Amino acid sequence: MNELERMLADSASRLFADAVTPARIDAMEHGLWPAELWDQVEASGLTRLFVPEADEGAQASWTEGLPVLLAGANAPAPFLDTVVAGWVLNQLGVSVPGGPIGMADLAVPVSACLHGDGWELDSPVAVPWGRYVGHVLIRAIDAETKAPLWLLAATGAAAVETGVNLANEPRDRLTVQRVPDSAAVRGDPAGWPAPPQALGALTRAIGIAGLLERILNQTVQYANERTQFGRPIGKFQAVQQQLAILANETVAARMAVASACAAVDAGDWTQAAMVAKVICGQSAGRAAAIAHQVHGAIGFTHEHSLHQSTRRVWAWRAECGTEAYWAAEIGRRAIARGGDALWADLTTAAA
Image (cartoon, rainbow, N blue to C red; front, side):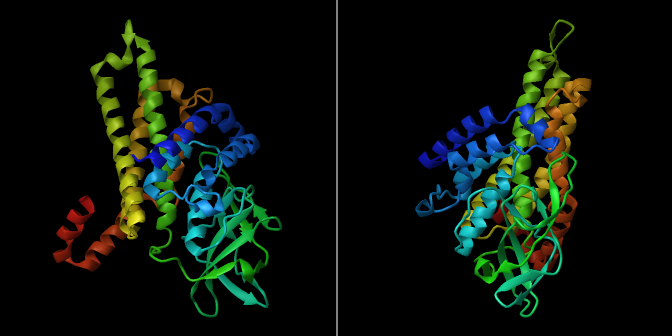
């Protein structure tokens, strides 16, 4: 860990540990935007994690920024989406606006037509936190040239169809009005993945890995505090075995996203992002089950905050492609590469 990574990690750990509370998460789930929290996050500069220093950013690599993303996963706001959108905008050579930024679903193709000096979309776009973001970044296809096109659309005049996921996080659909051609960039950034939704998969994988660390810490603390037959339940071998499995799942998820972030920095990251989503999705299911087993009935109550994390990892494992979806894609790629390349591909990925 270099000096920049250590400084960013310390800053994020302090901020999110103090500012993200069960009460704020509960308020978000009841439809209240955490304005004070978002102001604190923006004032810290962490939303501009990947933005160049000349544009008031930290100019961190993905490896350097990973501890910040993991710490911010628990925030009841579009922190990860805003940071990742900022990275894409930087790759496109576009200045990053202030305020929360949404990323339109990259798995759902949308077509755009140029009329005069503005672009019109042929359908609404799915945008997590859409009702709250000031801008949404959309990857569209030029209806005339069939080439990729990126649009940074202001959402002030957009019509919003609200929705939520399992964790009551906003999952909305926006009907975006005319986007000025000045807010468009033609073509993908260098090294852009195919399929493009691999970026969303990596974002959700990082979110899962961050919350698994919180679930692990919360479960270990509960096991050390809850007594049965005159001793903490964490002293019983059966519980210790389950905690060890939970720790293994948490570490596996952390290593998977760390490898994917290193691959992003290296410029060839599609496969690593897909693998990370598979591993994190599998770990989410196993870890959440163990956490609720250790907590017992109290973990299912609204008053206990465990469900705030477990419902989100359950929701995120299904978003941006399930582990089954990405496992099938990995298999298709392996078949296309041929059997002679399989061992080399596996050993290169492991290295």
